[in-house]
Structure formats: C-alpha cells, structure tokens
Amino acid sequence: MINFAKLRKEIQDYDEEREHLIKKSRDVLKLSKQIIYAVHRDEIELAGQLLKQIEKEKQELEKIATHSKKMIYEGSFKIAIQEYVEAILYYEFVKNGNFPDLKVIPEQFILGLADLPGELVRRAVFLAGKGHTEKVIHIKDQVDMLYGELLKFDFRDNEIRRKVDAIKYELRKLEDLVLDLKLKGR
Figure (tube, rainbow, N blue to C red):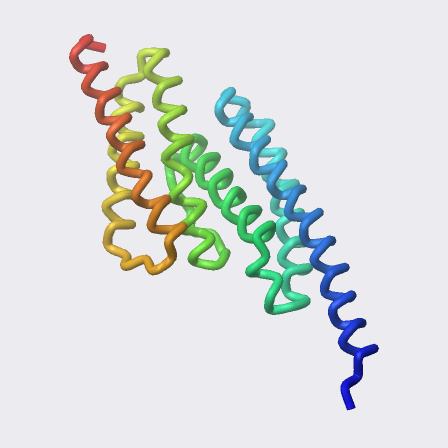
C-alpha cells in the first residue's frame, strides 16, 4: 500500500531544506557582489575580509546541498556558486595576478569563469583612465588566454556555450581599448 504520510514527509523535508538552501545561497550571492564591488573600488583589504566570510558561508551552503543529491541542481545553489567563483577569481587576479583552481562542480566553475571577463573589462577601463596601459594589455592577454582555453571544450550545455560565446565580445572591447590607448600614445 502507498505510504502517503511518508511521501508527504519526504517532500516537506526537502522543501524545508530547499528554503534553507535558498536563504544561504542569497548570503553567498550578496557577499560575492560585495567582494567584486570592493575590488572595483580598490578596497582590497575589505575584499579580503569579505573573502573570509564568504568561505564560511559557502561551506555552510555546500553542507546544506549535500542533504539531497537534487540540491546541487537547484538554481539558487548554482547561481551562488557561479558568483562565488567569479568573485574569488576576480579578487585573486587583482590581488595576486593569478586564477586559482577552486573546489566546485566543474560546470559551475566554468560558468563563473565565463562571467569574469565582464569584470575584467570594467577593471581595464578603470586602469586605462589612470594611464596604466601595460596593465590593460595584461588583462586583454589574460582574457584572450581564457577564451582560447574555453574554446577547446565541447560544451553541450546551452548556458555555458552562450556565456563562453559572450567572452569574444568582451575580448573585442579590450582589443579596442588597447588599440585606442596605443593610438593615443599612452
């Protein structure tokens, strides 16, 4: 006989965990945006403090997500991890000049990485305004490298493909910016 009480309980428990996951995802998302904004304003020390917070929040989020195999496919979880990846990569690039490997689901890492060039373009424009042509060229070269590496993949996921395709437009903006700086002799 069908145990409807058990089914109701399982669905209710999942819904409660999902609500908890959504709330914690919002916390990670908010901190990600704060880190990116702090880095844009050259408040690296503040971004570093926020980084410590986000690591703790991300651990809690992942702990919640392990309660059910379906949780890692929830939209709020995926978006939070993508934003986390973008924020950490942006912070590390500006502070240390590198792109660290992060322990997250590969598809979510790629999605966060594919969003990064948009932030790097903003950084390049900021640096161009301060006359830092070599740093702008370095950013352009790094985005070119990222795009070249991502083109080696055979992505089946439409969202990933769309985001990777968008990188070429960000790269074009950077190439135009570098050309403009060189023509102006900066």
